[in-house]
Image (cartoon, rainbow, N blue to C red; front, side, top):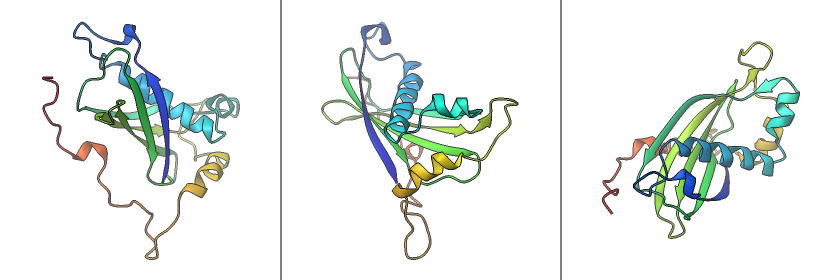
Length: 162
C-alpha cells in the first residue's frame, strides 16, 4: 500500500458563515493531496499531460465526520491500497486535525485518458514503475490490504453539534 501525508492550513476564505470549511473545498483539498503525493514519487501531472495523458476525476465521495475550522492545520493521508490495472486508480483520503481527530474521509476514482480524444488509456508504465515498490503479494496471492473496508463503509457519527 502506498500512503503519504500532506498538510494544509485552512484559510479564512475557505470557511462558511458557521466557521466550518465549506464542503465544496474538500474536493480541492483532495486534489492538492493527490498531486503532491504523486510529486513526492516523482510523478508530475504536468509531465503526464506533456505525454498526452490526463487524469480526470471519474468518481468522488466525501464523508464528513467533524468540521474543520479556520486556521486548523490539517493532515491529509492519501492512500492507494492496490496497484490498479487498466485505466483507473482509486485514491483514498483521511483528513485529520492537529488533535488527530478524523474529520473527513473519502475517495476519488481517477481515470487515465488521452488528452487528444478523451478516451481511457492504460496507466502509463512510468507511473506503474514508481508505484510498484509499495505493493507486495501475500502468500495466497492476494494483494496486501485486500478486503479492508473503504472509507465509505463506516457509519457517520453526529459530531457536528460541537
